Length: 162
Image (cartoon, rainbow, N blue to C red):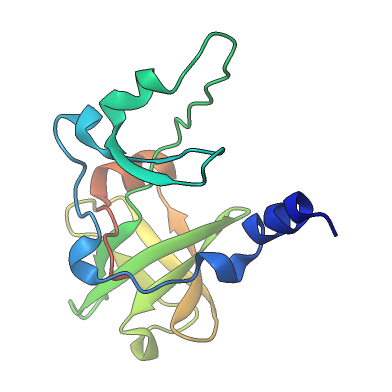
């Protein structure tokens, strides 16, 4: 196998991206001003890595280059509900499954299928537990006029550690 093919194969090997990341190095909030975020630059000819700032990107773009912007937004997927007893429940939305969500629920052992959870600040919104999965996960369904609007109003950003 030629050297370049071997090098390219390593780029797609997931194990090459596994590393220890100390918790104090995990950003909890975006840097201000935003163009002061860090930029890691690879000189493809020398193989040398360089730490820069995003405002330096203009030095690396040339006429004819394609710049792809990722305009996705992070969902404020962490919600706090209560049981009918008043006990507090934390919900972390993991993925949308049709008209339901897979979520991590705490304390999971006390949250059963068929149960409803409530949001005191949003009396018109409820969550129904549809199914119990392993490792504290649940399938749930929102009962709300606008599920997406509710999540954006009531949800919090899920910052590490999850």
